[in-house]
Image (cartoon, rainbow, N blue to C red; front, side):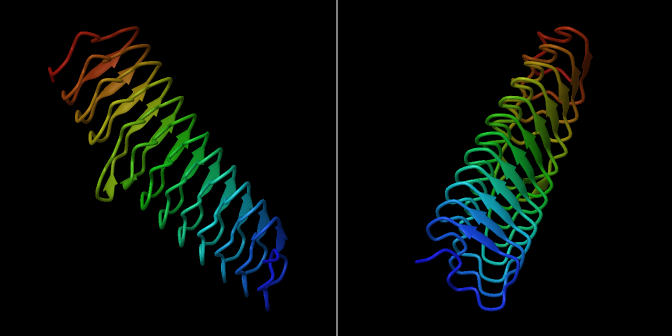
Amino acid sequence: SLAGDSITTGIGNVAVGYLSGEAITSGNNNVAIGNATLESCTTASNNVAIGVAALRESTTATDNVAVGSYALNASTTGNNNTAVGDSAGLSVTTGTINTLIGALAGDALTTGNSNVAVGYNTLSGDTKGDRSTAIGMQALALQNFTTNTDAYNTAVGYNAGYSVTTGVQNTIMGGLSGDSITTGSNNTALGYATLSENTTASNNTAVGFKALIVNTTGA
């Protein structure tokens, strides 16, 4: 099929590549560049998809930016998402207002909302968590909520909060800080390797180089 060959009343669309924008009928101001980009889009508007199969399954979703092969590939009706990088936001379906930058960033998210993930493999295990911020390679990589949950976890630094699964409201800043926390909540770790052995403990505050490094389950 030809790029954009179903457009009837849609205006201001750009489609370049095999099957790109193939199903667009009345959607406006979409940019689809690359094979199968925005292939399923019908009435959605104001999307930018660049890279093989970027935003491929999007039907009525609007105001999304997907740059990179398979970025936001599965998004159907999710709005206001930004994904940049190979497979960034790969599995997002109806999630909204996510910013995912880096290869595999947030690639397991489905219905999670309002997350920020910047860096390779950041927030890559979570499916339905909301309102987390992960910045740095593999930050919050294992976080995973199976129901939509306001996590409010913030992790900044290489492997920061790497092992957090269902812990909530943790603030973790520094390389390897809090990287063993799993279900612990309400922890604050600031500095290299702070709280790095903590697993399930909650309500700890560690500030400074390797602060509370040997604390495991103590609150």
